[in-house]
Length: 296
Ligand SMILES: C[S@@+](CC[C@H](N)C(=O)[O-])C[C@H]1O[C@@H](n2cnc3c(N)ncnc32)[C@H](O)[C@@H]1O
Image (cartoon, rainbow, N blue to C red; front, top):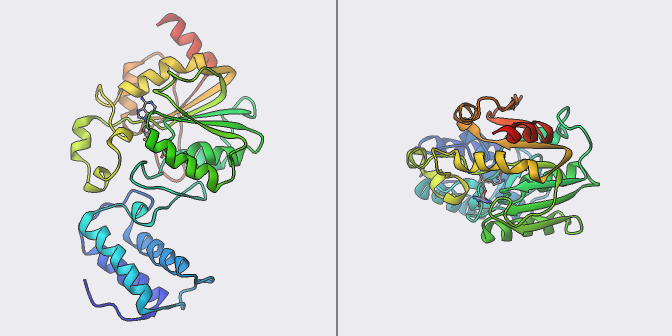
């Protein structure tokens, strides 16, 4: 790495972007390019140092640079996602606490949440389940979008739930957001107006091919047996029993979606389209799921 000299924020972002671009790194854990990641790092360090109003002209001191370059070195040498180094990730316009116990939030579901799932829901949801919640980003952002709702965050991982609990405190939502340790629905006996799930859906073989940054994440958050289909298929078959009469399931399966559609050819999946990218999210009503699984 080059020797950094005190400069302004704009120049510093350019320097960091150049450094990042010169290395074989993968972007997909909160940003999708080195420029955005450089800006994130610089703004984070300046903010943490107490700089209140950051502009392109803000002075970046030698002390700031030492911190920026220490984090940059880890990003480059260890290929750790920036979100883990900074212990934060932005999702649906909110900043969540994250660390290696949870996947870095990046689901296209954020776009649906910000739009309050328009026009997918039959009723305003009063009860919401974030199944496979990880950091809790989906359920907590939904709780903020629907201020009258009660939300359950469920995950099989006690470690993930500890992070979700940190985020519940961060957003002061302890009065209407709870956590539940559960293998899918095994320890859940309620029904919900809305179930949202971003479960693991990557096959073991695909996982082995993924860039190093994914290997810093909990494997439990990514890999599902049966070529990635095991957990999504279980969620499809078990959700009807946990949805209210007019309830809706929103399930993310990423690029596994064609295989899932093929495995359940007569299930009337509605595959959603996203303005800001992403694929493989389906919407199914309680009625559709009941009807399908009554005959299959
Ligand atoms: C893809 S991550 C999603 C995390 C979070 N919802 C997000 O969008 O960032 C999947 C999560 O599912 C959890 N998980 C894996 N198998 C599970 C199971 N059988 N039951 C419940 N949760 C499970 C993992 O611990 C992980 O936190």
